[in-house]
Length: 203
Length: 82
Image (tube, rainbow over the protein chains, first blue to last red):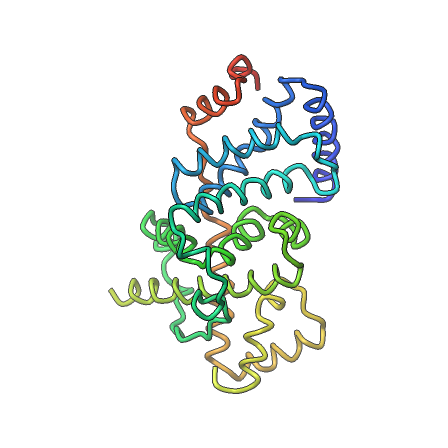
């Protein structure tokens, strides 16, 4: 996103928030039109389930409109909504997959640096292999198999294109943690996709 | 991926691919890459991995789900307003 359009959307978001704070329901609808696509994508990639993602989107906007007076505009509206969506998704993940999010052990959960073992160069596979629905499904599955902390950073920073600072703000972690987790996520995904594409190349 | 240099490159690979590496670091990395096949493959496939994710089609909220969202927030009257 370029700086100018970012500024315009921040300006109009501020006006939108003021209208929501005044109780203008049409502003709530505008907020949903503008931000629900992003919130849905994040919710879906975090939970890996369409029905859960839909619930997370509902919860996010419900919580956001209730707490709109607490929105101070230090972060952008989108970043604030992503923060709420991430918390809502985490609550659900804790219920469904408690083993994935409750323990904070890097060694157990593979959040450390992946030392590459896959050394096959698969970059020159035919383009149709990269664009197939099987490959796209594998790409999505690989996101789901990342440890939760790496997944959250990868989804916001890489897939949604938030800045490092915005990602840190949305996840309530340091800028260094965003950089380290993004790098670890990328390496894990490369390893996983290398195995997949190597098999495809040999098939 | 055997030497200390490979390890050093591995740690800085995202910085390098993001275009955030200093001129010195870039030069050091490129020197190493020209002589290390393994690291070359890892950098190329990591770059391709990132590119594939950037090209991945974006999932969209289904129209029925949008309908339910508006209803749940008591905003159905605005459903047809864009």
